[in-house]
Length: 283
Image 1 (cartoon, rainbow, N blue to C red):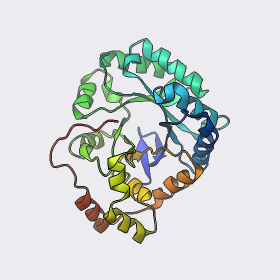
Image 2: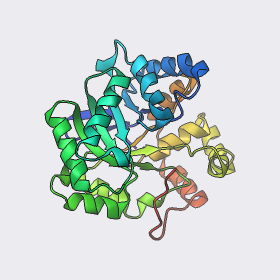
Image 3: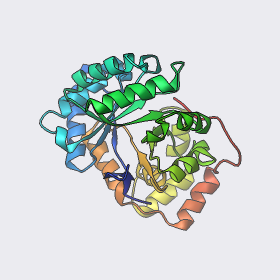
Image 4: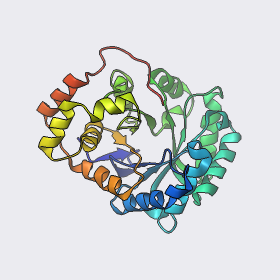
């Protein structure tokens, strides 16, 4: 397990960041969401992930409020809709995101998922945004191994700096081919929903007796155990949403959790790794 990852041989980032999915949807929660993000920055969780999709830009506005007077402490990520990823439309979408975020640049800009606009157009837009100083790096999200290989064959595609995908203990499909491919090429993987989204899989994880026993023995929560498991992989960052200061504290503490081989074996037995290729999980 590593508590940090090297990004583009340029900067070392913590292996746990802060997600913002579902933020900005309820004005009653805005104050606590802003406070949580700011608290995370104080604890060194400086990667903040958002997207134009989240709450139709509302999450970006929450993040923008949280970053006032603190932009230099954050490593900011946002994502563009596939239908906004054209040579011109991606530039317009980025400008809208920057206005909502109240900043003049993004550290990383991602294509949210593969779409119908040719990748060469999206790459061209990303390059123009870089040249204009609007973004420092660009990457993709929800790209399976075949999608990634298609991207890498495009001129400029090798500049892809990250792939953000769903990854947690009950959804390990990327371990078969996508994760090794990213690790081999030095492309960081950003794991969204590292604790599983609400539903059966989250229930299965949070109520699993094996996980509960390991967590109890380590005097940590099951959520911390799951985060530590995700970031055990080289070059993998977890970006859980944390809508409260308490959850941020819990997430940050997971950076110090070390899992031994016996614990990892027990977790593998409870939630086996993939034996063959499976379709990429997306939510």
